[in-house]
Image (cartoon, rainbow, N blue to C red):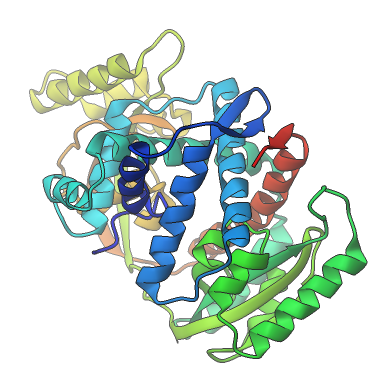
Length: 427
């Protein structure tokens, strides 16, 4: 089956197994997380899903104990993030969800109807698939809101990386990296560094002896991607955490690096594959937009409807785009310029906005669409070949640094979230 989504791990397989288990399992409480519970059926469903993924990939099946431990930790962290989302008032409405699912279908080169058929063909419920995607988006929003305020990038860091990018040109290499984190904490949450180092040295020995790295990750890793075999995806040296970059630069496929010590524990890395960096777009766009932010007094539906009305007024010649932007847009910087944004490569924008400015014809106003910032309409005024100026290099460096630091802080934040919670594992 083609890859269905980058937002949810094994969503289709998980939901299909949910339906199978529902007929045979009698639910009981497996884990208490603060004031809420995780049911035994939820735990078993995720375990079965991981087993299916391992079988399909031809990997070595981890032990039942390792699978149960990792599945429990995955569900605990999901529950904690959803609890935080509720406290923060984060909601994803159906219009935003529809837009996200359309993007997933587009990434897989199929219409939404075909995606729906693919999901149901695998035995999953389309309604449950939608809700799983909604949950993944909510958790992403919680992470973004919680972590971005912890990130600081000095001008010196940005300038240094911009210089490196300029010198590298298009010669960068991408690495497919797998990762194992051996936590400093034992099963009771107590820090025991000598024992952690001993465990990490044993894992490193097995990895270098050729043991299945994915199985080792499921068995031994405390990282959030353990159930995916530690897969971190494709990264350049510049985009990966500095600790990892120093250990992997100029290494070849199959190289195993470790032990790398951080505040969380000992890291072990393996280069699964190497390739030339994918070429970034050379295009820049000049666009203008109107942003309406929903609030306690302005509903999602009303925000969307306002933009529909604005679009119709501009098309009918009743009002100008600039006039409406000045009067109504919640983006003060562009509103003062009649909604016009600076020249920029599409990649600098959040994914939903990026996709719109990439695909729109010139001088066509989009239908209203949702991003993390609110509801927008956008119009592309001009396109040009990218001008690789110092400012553009700085923007690129800033994006890379933000992504790198976000990942580093995410791991720390998740550990803090777990440490501060009341968790009672009953199975």
